Length: 407
Image (tube, one colour):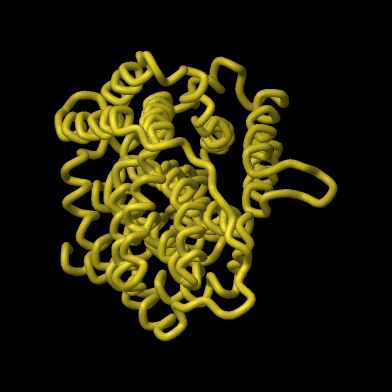
């Protein structure tokens, strides 16, 4: 049975890494779901054990925050914020700083993928109309949402998973992770401003300007969503269970006289939730073999000590760019049972910073590129890497320096 389990696990993670196979329409979520089905079908675990493998507090927290984000999107808040920022287009470098700062701040308290999904089309159209090159600004948007989301437990899915499984304190996490995130964000802006100096203006033959249809701005609904965010963050600093606080606030938002429930639930990322469920089951199957408990010692014997924070950061970066950061974190949390808070902080920062390296390292990158492509703006793998690789290296230097200072 151990051999069968390893085959299922390996094929699942290979599919997640590749993102698909020729001749099949399966994506990463499809592979994770099939892997979970296979674990039950061949008898690695029964259906009861599969359901027990699901980390319900993490899933509840992620779901609830998606509901909050849906409220803000339906209220037109994200599109309105992007339009307000567009008033500063006359000063490209300043606009880039404001765009990155705003998207990073919003990503720290809301899901970073949602910020990319809603900001990208509105900002792209505004830039094209102003005859500015959208590429550096969209790269800045993707980089900033990743870097900003690293600062808090609720900034991205992998941080939520780490925070919930390791029972980390919200305030302590913020105090440890915010400084390197801010410094990495400043360096990312500086690198972009230097690399594209003199090239912010659009070349001849620009793509035609399209229109973007987003929900109209409704101040009342936006303020309701923002109030929910403030209440959530305030309560997260208490000892109340985060998942219960979040689901209660989400329930309050659903009690609306204007926002139909199906509208809100239609914006919940069920795809991502299914990916999480599948990976929970698959990694639990691997855990039943007993190999995860032995792997850290084997890695240490070969010079990859996961209990040393620099080594953990390096392993996380490599694995995050092989299979993406969410599957990487889900596996590494199984390899580090009872790890110190500092190790979990490094795991969160390293997995998120690594998402900027190449296009497939983060879902946020893929969202920005796909949304821009629909509007006629192309960001190639090479163009992203020319910025993503140096920024990631700078970010990891910041992280390693911070680890050294805190030791």
